[in-house]
Amino acid sequence: MRVLLLGGTTEASLMARLLAQAGVDAIFSYAGRTAAPRQQPLPVRVGGFGGPEGLAAYLRDTGITRVIDATHPFAAQMSKHAITACAKVDVPLLAFERAPWIPKQGDNWLTVPDVVNAVAALPVMPAKVFLAIGKQLIRVFATRPQHEYLLRLVDSPEAPLPLANANVVIARGPFTEEGDTALMQHHCITHVVAKNAGGMGARAKLDAARALGLPVILIDRPVMPPRVIARTPEDVMKWLGHPACLGV
Ligand code: 3Y8
Ligand code: NAP
Image (cartoon, rainbow, N blue to C red; front, side):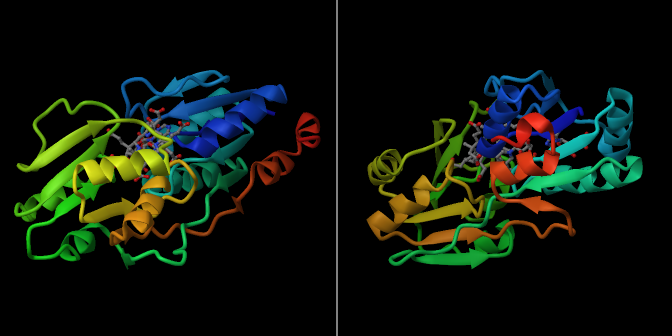
């Protein structure tokens, strides 16, 4: 058995540890989005495959017999390419998908289908907005220059940001409720914009917003085509059916 683990999330890092402990022949894959991604206990490859065709060729050439897609729910293009490529070369694919966050007592969430609707949901009057959505989507907020933005990025921006009135915090998660509460108080945040990523690595800002009584504009994740899904690492290991995996 040889496994390709499409990574870039807390869950992928957890799977990497379990596969390494079980002695499974596996390769961890990053897109190469960040300057210094977390080290992994597996051989790592970095960079795109060259579309579904490139991924299909990679699977054939590398002798991959299973693919685990543990990418982020908003990494929809990678996940769609994995579905296409695995079907093309008849390699079983499993998505390790974390459940979406659901509101708790005291949450003040407005859910929107995409980032354009998130911009439209902001008030007309100037606000102080915590944009905890990384850097790929922030340019859409340039149409609302009346607000002051707090951006949290993994790496320092190489080019000027598309937002005139923005403070930048460089940090990689996982984050804590205490840390995010202090950050939002320090910047007098009035609104939080976030993606419904699920998982534990990014949920702190939602708990901090609840504690501070702040509204959250939450962007729904893209809808994916049908695929086999696991919600726990134990189910992933069972799906692999590798003798060393069954004892997990
Ligand atoms: C390159 C790998 C680990 C995995 C950690 C998780 C948790 C922290 C929360 C906030 C939200 C955001 C962002 C975020 C989180 C985990 C997880 C998660 C959100 C790393 C990583 C890579 C990336 C890519 C990066 C994106 C950006 C998104 C920042 C590593 C740290 C906002 C998503 O500068 C850029 O271009 C950044 C791009 C895609 C979204 C965006 O659109 O900008 N993640 N994040 C992966 C690769 O190259 O394949 O560097 O170590 C992984 C993690 N990010 O094991 O510790 O599992 O969710 N990542 C979001 O959820 O909204 C931060 O600030 O509150
Ligand atoms: P995306 O938009 O779905 O993918 C864009 C292209 O990046 C893909 O078509 C593929 O290139 C390449 N790619 C993506 N993930 C890859 C991986 N794990 N290994 C190799 N190539 C990969 O992806 P994204 O949203 O930019 O996310 C990129 C990475 O960051 C993923 O690993 C994801 O798990 C992680 N991440 C994303 C978010 C987020 O908010 N989007 C949050 C946390 C972590 P080719 O077409 O050339 O193969």
